[in-house]
Amino acid sequence: MTDRFSAELMRGSLDMMVLSVLKKGPQYGYSIQQQLREATKGRVPLPAGTLYPLLHRLEAEHFIRSRWDESTGRRRKWYEITKSGGACLERQAIQWRAYAECIRDLLEAAPGLRPATA
Amino acid sequence: MSEQEFELYLKLLAKCLHLTPGQRAQIADELRDHLESRLDELARAGVPREKAVVQALDEFGDAAVLAADFSTIARLKRRRLLMRLSLGSVGVLTAVLLIAFAFWPDNKAVRGPEQLVAQEKPKVEGPKGVPAHSGKRVGKGNPHSGNQPTPQQPPPLGSVRFLPVDHPLSSDLARQPVIEARITEALNQAIDFSIDPQSLKEAVGFIATRYGIPILFDQKALEDANVDVSTEVHLDAPGISLHDAFQLIFGQLSPPLGYDVVHGVLMITTVDKINDHLETIVYDCRDLVNIAAPESAVMPDHVPANSKDQPGAKSRHAEKTNDRFRASPPFIRIVTAATDSESWGEGASISELGGLMIVRQNPRMHEQIKALLASIRLMRKEGAFAVLNDQYESDAKKQTAEQSGLAARVAQLEHELAALRTTSTPSAKPWTPPPAK
Image (tube, rainbow over the protein chains, first blue to last red):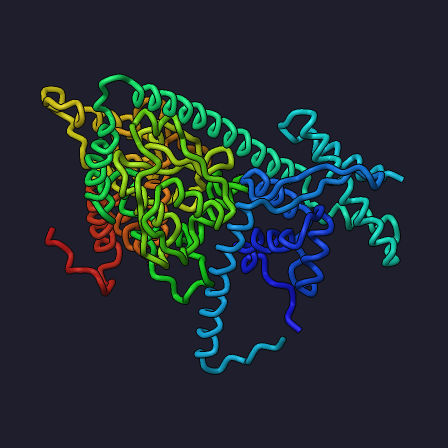
């Protein structure tokens, strides 16, 4: 089993990860963090100190919007993806798939590397 | 069961947030919800309460750092709103004017905008891909690549170091806020995209999203300099650093643009404006204190005698500048002599304190200084100063001895001693035959 991904590796893709979780429907911060953890088998921990500034920035850029809900007794902020957020996700996804393919080809061509364990 | 520790943390965070009370309360509410959810989960997993509280808080990290991040983003939001408002009002005004024009009796103005576009295009596309204004910040010969050696081994993907020498400690690196450090890091990364022809605004928006860094246009400066952010730019040079990518993109515009990292934002503005922005950086030069530099080597412009009769404010200014730093430690003289001497006027300063060099200058000059210090350190690493130092020391010794007449005195003493030896011990071997008496 592979360990957690290094922060360096994840830096450029955190926005895309959060947007793709929100693409499934509205979420609040804690649930985004949990879903990301589950979906990546704990390899993307995304600490709260990183997650919330990231959410606020995405909101400032109009990729997501938020609303408050108090129906559960606890004041909770829900986020959902906007149209431009969806478009941004789509663009990034295309690039990342192509990027991942390039890297895979490159690694497969490199002699002496152990094959991936997944 | 609201945890005291949580409230304490949220209070501390709120204190550091430079936001309205309403915004602060909202952030506190959101984080409180997270902390309590996390605590519930940890409790369910059987983690003792105290440990769970510490763990939940740890995941948020330092309150001051988090507050700085939130404040920066809130500022970004405010600026975007202002920008939209001003853009909106410009849009409305333009629409009103266009309608008024269109319905104006006997108007021939319909061609106006077309003509404007036709005139502007060649101007934009002329210097295609060539940074038209080298020497300025835009194409400054890139101090990062010019002085850096090729790395021994390929760095990890997307990391090109700003300064190659292992001693780049200066106050701007040591105390850089988190977000600015992130911007600096992004600037050093190799890009893996190309930019198809599109407006500068769109291209910059794309870069901001891709790297997750706040980038703003200095609207006022750009308007004053008549820079149109809808000018088309393009770039196809994957693998270069983001810093260099910006230079190439900005090189396609006129007048030259540059960027400045201020208040946690990468601000795109004119080169003139950047040069006006002075900042103070403390460079750690304790390792350079002992380098001895011959005065003549660092004062190429200095003309001591009849310089006053010479016309040209430039050379007089350079001379004045060098005079000012004549009594300074060698590395300060090196820095002032090797950088643009005209930039050491108005407001700029350089001083030394126990091996620390405190410099107030614009970012362009700071880049020059960093590159210079890096080169000196690199040369020293190669052993260049070992020879220079020895040679300098022996030259200096000789000179001092001659000046004080010591050499003459030594010769005389040797002579007297020889005379003495020959009279007392005539059989002594190594001495020359005694002089006839």
